[in-house]
Image 1 (cartoon, rainbow, N blue to C red):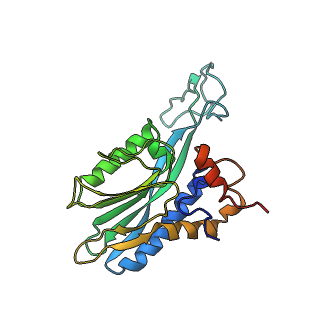
Image 2 (cartoon, helix red, strand yellow; image 1 turned 60 degrees about the vertical axis):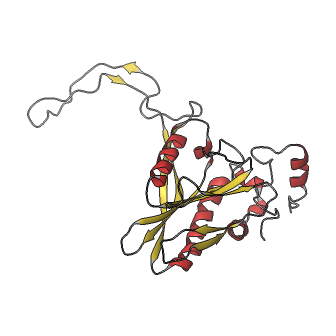
Image 3 (tube, rainbow, N blue to C red; image 1 turned 180 degrees about the horizontal axis):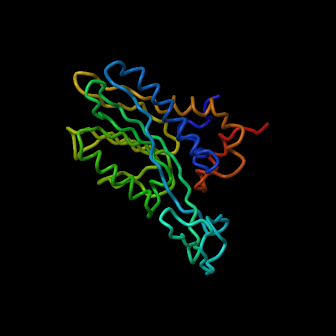
Length: 257
């Protein structure tokens, strides 16, 4: 079944669903775009690798559980030049690092292998007010905007800090399409919670016309294939809705079997 919401389902932003939705959305989107642009262009699924330290609790450690001094001792078997190696005199704890892969799409010219368009679906890490993930994303965003590639940036997250765009209207969700010949101007779709997601252009290079991506149809397909109706409604949306918006959303939540 498609999502019961007329536009973006606010429950998809929950931790239990978002990463799965993010990956499915872009992989299926690659197929939809690829069917329109072959054989002149290739649509690749590429990865960002996000590294973050796990919190102190519950953190597992690499090495011993504390910082200690041990007696240096020689090994019984000497080294190749007759010098016995020494054990390290101390042991230290290293923070455990969690690596997360998040996909994005690159539309590539088949002949020149030049990246023509980058398609990004923003993640919560991109929209945190501070931290290395946002800084890395903004640096990559700036490099695309300084290149001859188009940028398609899809934001289906109510939470976090929006991307920096001058004269940005107030909205819950948004889509930005930046073409190199139009910069610094860019197309912008401001979306409210109840708005149906639009069909957006995926810019190519002349003489090829743009491809098209129906975001609502893609979201509904992902929702159906993932079976989200069975598990994303067992808690409140993240961030929570309040007042009239909460009452409005409650009318769409399906009854659990």
